[in-house]
Amino acid sequence: MKKTVLMICAISFLLSVALVAPVQAQPENWKVLCHKDTKVITLTKDHPAHFPKHIVLKQFFPSEPAARQWVQANHPSWKCP
Image (cartoon, rainbow, N blue to C red; front, side, top):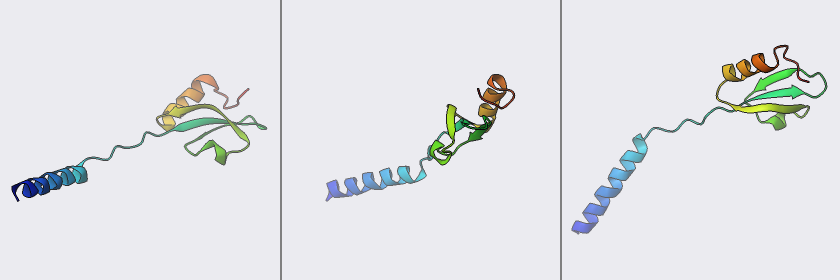
């Protein structure tokens, strides 16, 4: 009986910790895409498959401003080669 009570207390404790534990936010994954025909650069968080006429120039930016900053430094005209 004592063992059962201890087991129930342990399970209750673990469940209470799991319910109040903060959820880890997924990091954002911004991508810099280049349109194959127009050579215009686009920023997106969407999967590249949603942009069949684009190629990925660079990805895994943590935010839109970080992706924009990379474009400004590497392709200030917002056109890709």
